[in-house]
Length: 420
Image (cartoon, rainbow, N blue to C red; front, top):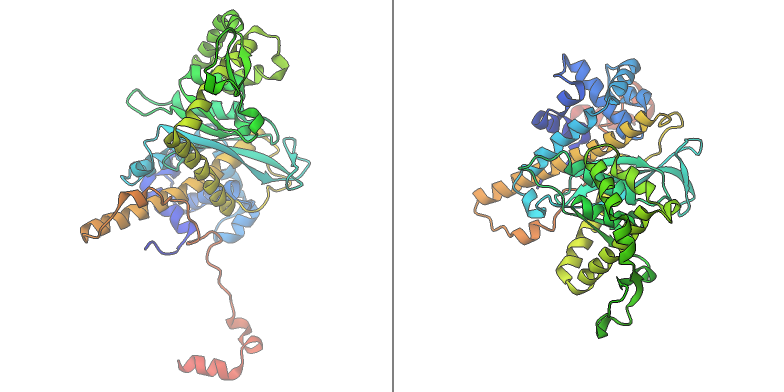
């Protein structure tokens, strides 16, 4: 129903709807050459190609033009603003409301292969390959609203909480804020669950190990008979009271912008054991994790919704791999600004595909309604805008055969072709 398309055509069509190139330049493009340079810079940052490779793909551009545009995109806030415009466009379509209300999200990381000489590269032991992590947050409407480069093999609780707080603090009073974030095992700690709750949202985790599914009760309390075998730990309310005021001051500092949520959680890592604030956050997190596990095991709808959010994130990774299927070049990502630009440009290009698919799906639904074709919303909810088999990410390839036709094509075939 949608049909095939070229990725370049998709980029231009979404830009015409959202004007994201205006956000990248800070103004409208002066001419076609400048607009092509911006698109080329997005390709160079957000895919495995470099400036020289993109220049060979786009006739009429010079490497210096793309390099200058790439440096301009590294300026703070430009890629974020462009990404926000695409998200707003995607969420403005009625079909997006069938997927979610925009108040829930999931987060996970994807690894980009790199050289081992990159300062932030670490070995991914499952694939025996060096790489850097791109940690992304996805709304329940499928849009990627936050990204950041991370060091792989580290706990991901800090970037998980930071992404939601960075999103919520930019929302106006009349806009929806996130109330739930679903993460995998690496995306939580007890302290992170406490920080998230005090910031106004729930951190819900899909625990991998059975040994981590422990339940805690306040010291001195008596568990119900049905839970006696499951309750294996005690929580000290005295420690929570002792560090409560300092914990609230930490939350107030995050809200006032004195430090980020990621910095706050990093300070409450394992090295902070013995600190009253860490003890209070850890004990409170144990109680919150117990409440979450009770809901997780007893409310099927809640469990199903959380798993659906996490599974959508895995589907997003397949699209991200299609956009960026190679590795980061040896000379790329050595500066923090450049690495952030690679992460955000990749997210922007992924959102372009999601927004374009959503737009075309909305066109099909509208056309069916005009034709009185029966439409059931429950199966539309199960169709996501992340399919990419119809997208040609590499562009149209042309072969200049005419100059070598005598050596490559039989004479009879050429005569027959001329007659036709």
